Image 1 (cartoon, each protein chain N blue to C red):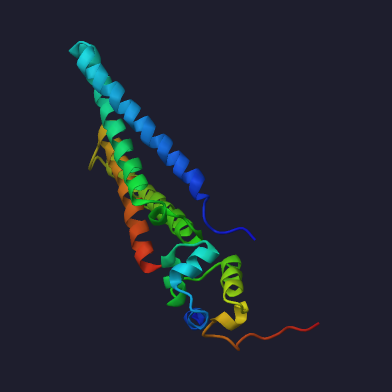
Image 2 (spheres, chains in turn brown, orange):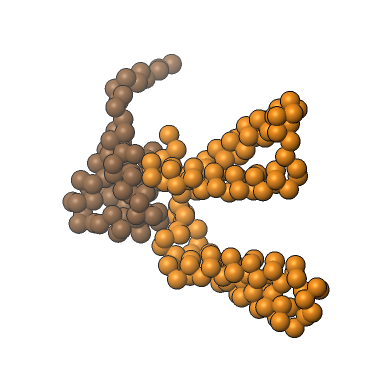
Length: 73
Length: 140
């Protein structure tokens, strides 16, 4: 998993501790999120995206993105 | 939408209660040891003193270090739960081995030995798994 949290955080002049406080998690969790070593819950991903003024799909990308097939009725 | 952490104030209250209980237990143990005659105070005072000391140290460290270091969020809760479940499974395997060792007359521990083994193994292995997962960052 790759994230753009660091990039969006820098744009807003926000430290990891600031983001952690806003979202309500430990700073280490933000560190692991930024390095792609922690897969957040949908709820946490939504909160981080909201705090950074963006959307989940902009913030988080997976390596196999594009492999999904949309099933239509 | 609610945040991911526990209410810090509530948590601090519980830690303070634990700290006070520890001091009370330590005090009761010391009073028992000093005031009561040796044969009647022996076991009880030792239990009160050791339990009280452990509670005072644990709660005191938490109060002294502050809430930030002990704040829980979804990652720490997940890691805590996985650590406990891995520990449970390891204990289950050890019990399986002990059962067969006993059945085949290879090792026949008495109840006290087995209890100490299980208490130490469950506590230590849970902590070891949790520390490992904390360093790794996630359970996957």
